[in-house]
Each structure stands twice: as C-alpha cells, then as structure tokens.
Length: 233
Image (tube, rainbow, N blue to C red; front, top):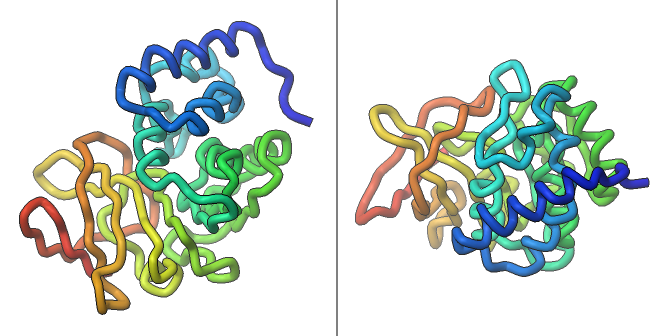
C-alpha cells in the first residue's frame, strides 16, 4: 500500500512541478505527472522532510545525497525509457529515482552498496514501485544478472565509466549522469556506444552542475573534441 499522502506535501509537490520543473523546459507530461505523485519526502532523512521539494540537493549521510528535483528531471527526460525498458540505477540510495523510472513503465534494477540507504530504498519501493529489483553490491560491479540495459543511470557524479558498462549496456543503450573532472565544473551528460566499438562511448554534455561523487568509481581516461567526448572505461 502506498504511503498516506500528506496534504502539505501534496501542495509542495505541485509547487515543485509548477515553479521549478515546468519553467525549466521539463515538458514530458508522463514525467511531470509522476513527479506530482511520488512522495519524495519519504526518501530523505526525517529532519529533511520539510525541504524535500526545495530546489536543492539534500544530504542522506555518509557523503550521499538525494539530487535536486530539477537535475533528476532533466536527466530522466533526456533518456525517457520506452515501456518495459531495462534500466539500471547505479547508486539508487533511498529509491526515489528507481521508483521514478518504474512509474514511467521501466523494469528497474536498483544497485546500491550502502546497506542503510538500500534498506530505506527497498521499503520505499515496496510501497510505491513494485517493479524494482534491488542488488546490494559494490557500485563498480554493476548488476550482470539483469543485463543488458537500455538505460544505465548514475544517481550521483562519476569520474569515469565503470568497466561493467562495456558489457552491461545494450547495443543501442544510453547512459546518463554527471561527469566530474579536475579543475572545472561537473557536466550532466548522456552517452552511447561509439560506432564499431564495444568499449568506447560518445558523450554529449548537457549542462554544468554539481553533485557529490558516488563511491567506488575512479579516474577518467578522456579524449575530447568539439564539445563531445569519446571515453574509454
């Protein structure tokens, strides 16, 4: 049974959509509808619930965060999954983004290494998004048992693509997240395989942002040209 809906939180959800998302070119009606309904306040720490719909990234403890609503919306809209698409959420934390993809019709694997966050995320998804399978394992390993994926979504910043992406991303799959780099702002990105390559990816940068790094993921090997990057794991 879904969490009971608090009237004040319902008002805050609608304000988030109308004041933050819609003015910022979030136009997908299915995505907007889901974000009006999904109780984000259940995915934060108890003392942060009053700020659950604010335009800010919220701490979850141990260096982990729930990204700000607009960042999540922009990235999810960039890789909107088709019905029954297989989606891997890397660093699923307390389950908000995994539940969001599930509500959009995807078959979701939520990968999380932090057992405390995963426990909260599993409880949330049992209430709000039954079509989510959880894998508790190092983020650097991916989740081979349900690969290949149509979408691999990094729910935090990375410095490189983990090696598992080469094997677990489907042939025409897409990745999305935030790529950090020394001496410059991080960039939200989408990526797909470089034609003819099994292990290199074409990266398109979307916008500058900030987000803490996910654990277990290390330094990049990157070659850049004309605003697009070819990245090897």
